[in-house]
Amino acid sequence: MDFIQEGFTQAYTLLRSLDPATYSAISSTLRASGLAMAASLLLGIPLGYLLGYFDFRFKKQIRIIVDTLLALPTVFIGLVIYALLSRNGPFGEAGLLFTIPGIAIGQTLLSLPIIIALTATAVEAADRNLHITLMSLGANSRKIAASTLWEVRLGILAAAVTATGRVLTEVGISLMVGGNIKWHTRTITTAIALETSKGEFGMGIALGLVLLLIALTVNISLAGLRRRI
Amino acid sequence: MSVYQLKDIDHYYGDKQVLSIENVTIPAASITGLVGPNGSGKSTLLKLLAFLEEATYGAILFNGQKVVPLSDKVRFKVTLLAQEPYLMRRSVFDNVAYGLKIRRDTKNLKARVGEALAQVGLDPQSFSRRKWSALSGGETQRVALAARLILKPEVLLLDEPTASVDSHSARLIKQASLKAREEWGTTLVVATHDWQWLYETCDTVLHLLHGRLFKGGLGCTVYGPWRIGQRDLLQKELEDGQVLVVPRPEEGKEMAVINPSKLKITLPGRDPLLKWNIDTLYGIVTRLFLERNGDTVQTAIKVAELVITIRLQRDKVEKLKLSPGQKVSIAYDPRDIEWF
Image 1 (tube, rainbow over the protein chains, first blue to last red):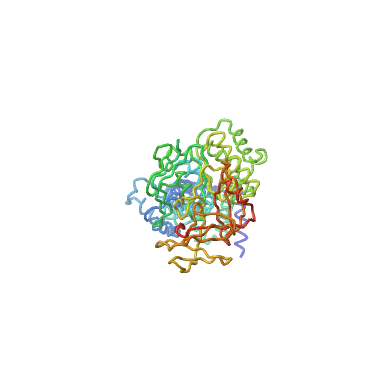
Image 2: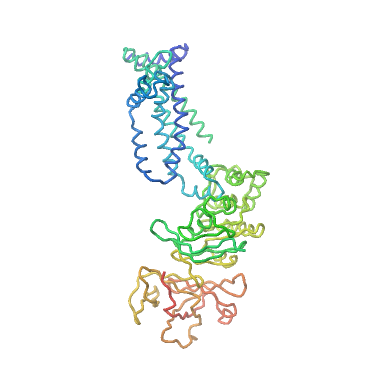
């Protein structure tokens, strides 16, 4: 059981001593997940609004597909993105395999269904009188969309928190698409997997605690944002 | 000049017809009252007048022009205050200023919001910064009304604005709405059960029953159970044992409506010689209300569980010396009772 205690001590030491390898992994993690979250919010919020607000043909079927994608395994996404970005794949020439943007593409696929599904749910759950109020105050379609999304901002924030948690902690995509290259695409989760396979449980726990600390910081920031809005 | 012209409106939700109105004209700067039981189509009609929905069939002309929902021709001119108003999750100030911001008309915004709040009896100092969640039901209704009055609308549609507020809020809402008509010539259409709204302020009262306009005043609706009586007519036994006789309904119609304009009121014992086809009910006058014109009196008569509201000439009321509590007899021809 000593390795657990050792892990806490090592985590403190790694952060305190500004360990370059650890900070490189933190940086890779934040860059990949930051890019993925930006892309999935930009795409997911409008798509979630469309899915939640409008009635159209095949809406139910699309909703079932989006909900199913919530359970998409990260290794499967990793495999698909690897196949697409590998040299023989359709996007091989883009040179995105084993890069942070490559990981971000995979993580976007992971978080996008979460943002779409939870935004759509928040929009559907909005008070039916909101639409009447906005229209009767003179809002056009664009303003109705913007104001409705602002009204359900807490639901969208919850979607962002959930997706961030999933993206920060995934390992399958980062490992397969990123390749776990030290100083380059090694994220905290892939580093944990590596250290554990080497039998360095203490180091693994230390990195796990660092990841937890990052998640805590992100969530405290989002909670602060929640209070302000 | 009419602000609205409704032409052969038929409106459906799915397969269900919810409105069927042939021709109605609403003059500019008038006050129109809408009455009818729940589900009669009042709110639906208001939504059509607000151009929030488009009638399935027929046309609603606004200032002589055909318009569609979200059209620029009406978007900034017509506003509806729903029965359960929704305040956005913002401060009172931001809620009231929302419509002006949309119109990019933000000159003297603070002063105008303050003025609108004062118009509905709310102190701008203490209410402007309040959150939407820190308001009572009556205050919410008044803030929602202020958000519409600040727009100085050409048409203000109110859906039972005083139904769920206290008498103080109701009075302020009424005053503020009437001021809009006086100051800006706003056309008001009000769905309400409030007698004062209907008879003290409205120029016209439209009575909706099952989505159709009832011609003949404020019809008294009667539901079954019915039993078969004499002369091939149906009967309903009222709570006090009196019997209301009605004709047989057409297929699919279940609500009988007594047309008050066809009734004859006398004092008991002074009944005219009744013809074979005339029946009589006895009731008690519960309320007398002098209408705006000063010539007619809306007279509510309670007959067992029914309340029949009849418009009587003022001199007739004086001649009969009608007052609340007075017993009266009501003569009616069952064939005048309509089915909806």
